[in-house]
Image 1 (cartoon, one colour):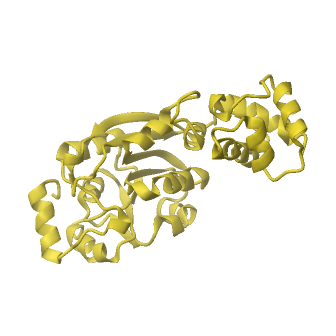
Image 2 (cartoon, rainbow, N blue to C red; image 1 turned 90 degrees about the vertical axis):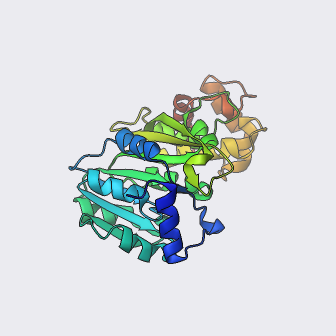
Amino acid sequence: MLSSPAETKFIIQKYGFTFQKKYGQNFLIDKSILDKIIDSAGITKDDCVLEIGPGIGTMTQRLCEAAGKVVAVEIDDKLIPILADTLQMYDNVEVIHNDILKVDIKSLSEKENGGRPLKVVANLPYYITTPVIMGLLESNVPMESITIMVQKEVADRMRTGPGSKEYGALSLAVQYYSNPSIVTVVPPSCFMPPPKVESTIIRLEIFKDKPVKVKDESLMFRLIRASFNQRRKTLVNGLSNGMGWNLSKEDVAATLVEAGFSETVRGETLSLEDFGKLSDLFCEKI
């Protein structure tokens, strides 16, 4: 099993593998952290797991032992022969050589799991964390949970509420689609090579019913993005400049007042419910 520095070094040297900065590669070398990921994801033999970025197969091996089926998506072509070696003893895994941002996850779910809810597990490179998470959440693919290793700052942003400097569009999107909970903080020493920042394992339990009902989901997220694109501006200015609609600044201000907010309110003070209320009011006016 690939869960120690010695085993990881052996595989890396055997294949002459070199870490590529562009892929943000940091391989887990701590068995206790692997155990926490598997346990918190609640993997059983009834599950089909989508793993993003399997690396040399360290976590993939553990997933294969716990799950019914594992589909691992890896972008680095130099890791494909290594995965063929480290996963050769498992007959319940399929490795897909592709960029996860280009994979049709809905079709993959239908093919591999008959459209039943997937469980997603990933040690995400920091540079693509937000696009991957947003892509998964917005895909409408049936998912039960997403258990991921991310930079600690990103995990904090996912869980924070109004008024915090970390609060933003990612916070609102994650909390609209899921209930985020921190599993554990992971120090740099648990990786090879060690990253320069602390990491966090966070589990997103996907809601069956969203906490806020809105008339137009895409409009609400356009409002949210426009509200945080220029954080220092008031919501009136942010929405007047960032929405590309035919409503005047006076129309926007009047709608905010109608919703019970001040004309000088800023987006960072509004909750998900507040944005839902605003979205429904603007929906009637555009």
